[in-house]
Amino acid sequence: MKKTMMAAVFESVGKVSLKEVEVPKIEKTSDIILEVEACSICGTDVHIMSVPPGYIASPNTILGHELVGKVVQIGEEVTSIKIGDRVVVNPNDYCGVCEFCLANQPNHCKNIKPMGIDYDGGFAEYVKISEKTAHKISSDLPSEIAVFAEPLACVINGAQKIKAQPGDTVLVIGGGPIGQIFIQVMKAAGAKVICSEISELRRDFALKSGADDVINPLEHDLEAFTKKCFPTGADIVIDVVGSQMSEAIKAVKKCGKVLLFGVNTQAHPEITQSQIIFKEITIFGTWLANATFPLAVKMLESGVLNLETLITHTMPLADLEKGLDILRKGEGIELIINLI
Ligand SMILES: [Zn+2]
Ligand SMILES: [Zn+2]
Image (cartoon, rainbow, N blue to C red; front, side):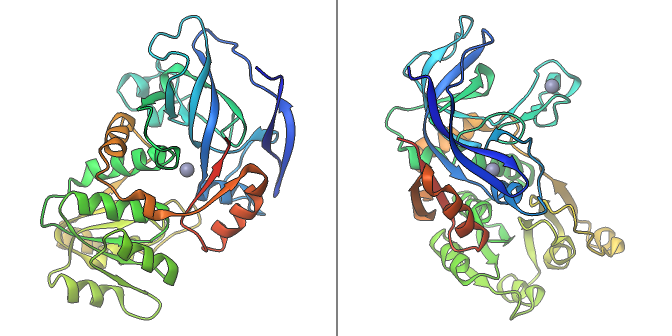
């Protein structure tokens, strides 16, 4: 194996550099080294690179956390994965022994370590991961589809809380990559789905994802539109934006469910608390993926979703900054960096 590799290193606020660094080495007996096939650009990467940053990453860390790769080296105690396997990775490494890990809630691990933020990630030719975060995929799943495993695992964690049934009516607020995946998962569950999104490009993609109708909330009233589509309100409202809770409460049906997925730490929406009581609404928060990777892999391999339609750009590592810019401006949906 080579000694050095190209990697996109987060250096300091607003600065990422493409440079030659050492190839990671096996240190612990549970370590695995992957040759990265592809890694997609996530909204979190855009937040990390913003000035001031919307998400704080450790300086000198290689970015990227939505990846697929081929196993090239394994530590001596690795038993579930062998050299040559292809895997997707849960980028939030967990300790396995804290109170939350023992309760099967690794997304709340007290010692959680996010890849591409606190340890080196997938915008590189090679990456080191731990065995418990690796999930095997079939040899013929295209890498452009496999990179959806992480966002899909997070969507499934939310979807398992709201339990959409065939015939349910769903409003998805926000049509970025996660919103599009929610639309597809809700359609696959047999729901009727509408999407609220300010960008025309994303509204077009929402229709391609299977949304029954779309709305620009800057031009039309969301509550009125929802009630035009679903006269008593939506059974389920999903906020992928991170600031739309009061809109969600207005649009949801009596006894309906609201799922809060998007994160915006600056948002302090004004909530009419009594509405939650009068309407008997259930509100769920959902955070990261929680033991949902196996199901995400199964869904990707089954082909039940239409994720290839979401891929707007594939590019080499050298174009990462260009890709971050496209995503920041909302001019793409799924942007994938191909490493091989
Ligand atoms: Zn992500
Ligand atoms: Zn833990």
